[in-house]
Image (tube, rainbow, N blue to C red; front, side, top):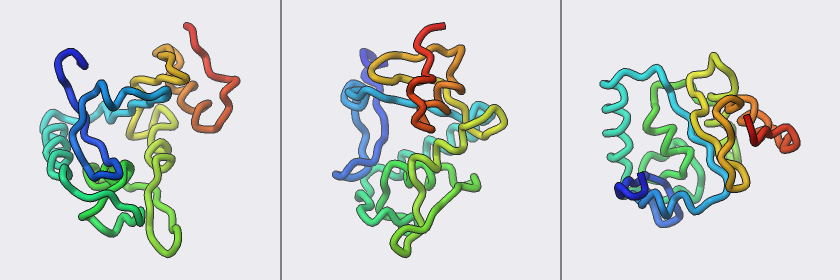
Length: 148
């Protein structure tokens, strides 16, 4: 995908922008979660909503009640607006964190499922995605399985 010049939409301190995968993937840890039950029409709608967020400013106040400024987890919150997202109150504002997003992928019945995991720069096996995902979320790094 990198060689095909694929990109990703992300919320960074400079705002919501489209960046090359090569730049985005310059990281050690990555979790890709997806809703595998979406229809093609839903996928198209969510993609259009995602592109509509490009150019918005970064939300340094982490307030989900503002829609003109976004952080990474708010980007997902805005795009997938038909989910019942877990939120928390922080400093008098409602916020959704990456942990809130991850909570929607913790078990086989959850709306999202992990489809790809990297930890410490190593790709984790598909055979233990969910178990590894939960071990990483809970900080139980000793339980992470690196081989099938």
